[in-house]
Amino acid sequence: MATKDFDKTTQQFENLFFGPARAYASLAVDYTEQLVNTQIGFAKSYADASLGQMRSLLSVKDPEGFRSYLESQQKVAKDMGDMLKVDAEKVVSLNRDFMQKSQKLVEDNMKSASKAANE
Image (tube, rainbow, N blue to C red):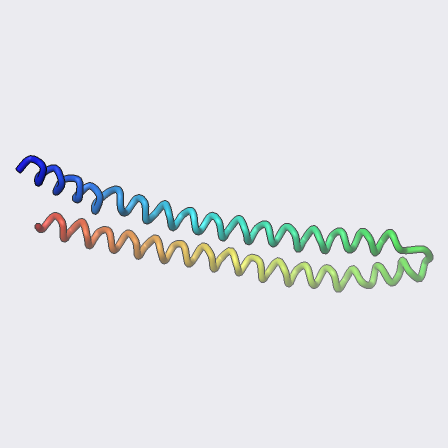
């Protein structure tokens, strides 16, 4: 009898506390991994663009080359702005997905807790 009660209590703790905590921790770790990988990708893209511009500047040898470099800066600035917009949208999408999954997890856990309380 004591073993049966202990098993039931253990199962209740698993269902009400440990299981949901593990599910949320797993969700948070997945989100963090995606966010870090996305940020690393951003950093690489921006570093590559910046280094490319530095190399272009180093190749300037005359006034015409300098004028050409300055003209190319407008395109680079536009491209960087476009990249920033896309990157911001990626982060917003990741955050939205995380929030939706978190809310669903909470709703599912509340339903389970309510069901367990009624038993």
